[in-house]
Length: 241
Image (cartoon, rainbow, N blue to C red; front, side, top):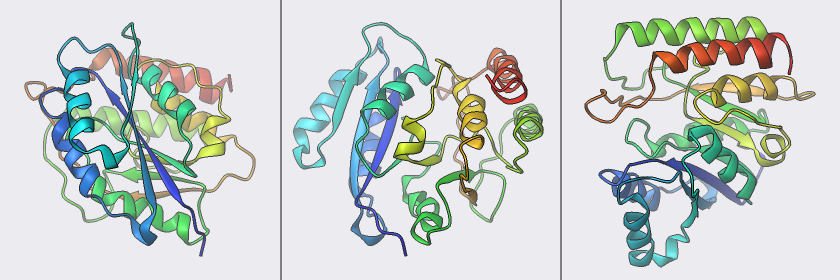
């Protein structure tokens, strides 16, 4: 059994004032296996709504949570926000959490399990395996996700089922040792390609649930991001940049 003390939770935030308190409620109530402590790092990517003020008010209401709010003075993209949060993380392991309500933090314990067993260094949470709830939404999105995962697997020689998943859990020294460049949604194929080349890295995948949003509910990723993902698969996967 492997023991670790703290999990750093990195939350990129852009115009999530309407729902950010809900994800913070879930993180506040979350109890991790073996009483692992939580370090919650929110990175406000120059939101134009009241996201930052909402987070500050929440932190003042619950000072024991020890929320850390980092601010970008210019909007740079989700990937850039993740770079900032990962760089500032101090926990033994780092997990990514979107600020919306598409993923359930209660399932961190699923991802932590292979770590505690001493089997894994990196764990992906797959929306397409296992028996967890999965909201039925866009056919072409699922096809696109499958194509991107397939192309990524060809480039990395991994057999993932969900490369584009938000839930990626990393040993902190591994993810902080990667030179990450993509500032938008290209983060996912880039980090997958680069972590696959870490010597002797052990990558696992576990099934998670998915409570997806429609565009009317605030979903931000679009078809242009899909083409960027293909470019990133070629650049960081096939060409090994």
